[in-house]
Amino acid sequence: MRFIRAGALMLLSGFSSGCYTTVPFASSPVAGQVLVMDLNDNGRVALGPSIGPAATRVEGTLDSRTDSAYVVKVQSVVYMNGSSNKWTNEPLTIQTDLVRELRERKFSRSRTALLAAGTVGAVVAFIATRAILGSGTPDTSKGGDGDGSQQ
Image (cartoon, rainbow, N blue to C red; front, side):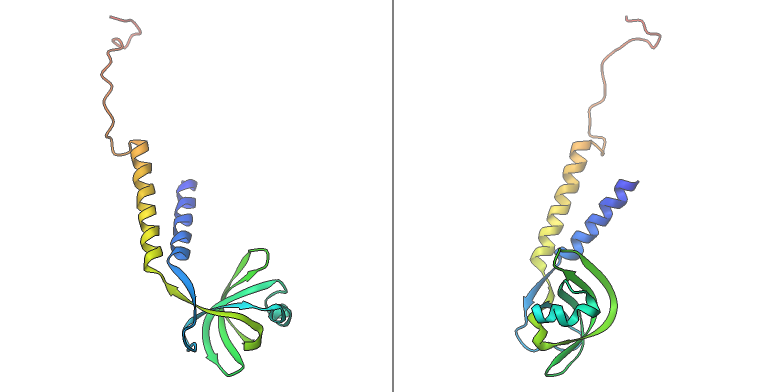
């Protein structure tokens, strides 16, 4: 049962990450959009007390924007060592000059289709190699009458 839960968790995490991509903004972001902000060196230093000194990326929903800052409801923070922390939409103000690159998170149909096809293929391969559906052949060898003697 533990393996089934672990497999389901891996599958769900694959779907959540595989269905989206990040792209540079074509225009100015508006409230409600999910932003992915890569911080520059000054950003890591300035935001260190709030989110940690090794933070490299902040992802969150834009709450409001001025000419000099973004107010985001933070969903996650990624650090230099590759680890990340989930946040629960805590508000954070990030000055625009602390952001190296600003992107938006978008749904990707092609990644979703590829992930779905791969998942279906893996399930079919698993079933085919385990004969789960009972497509095996019955045992037709005559081995005796049950008392250990051969006929």
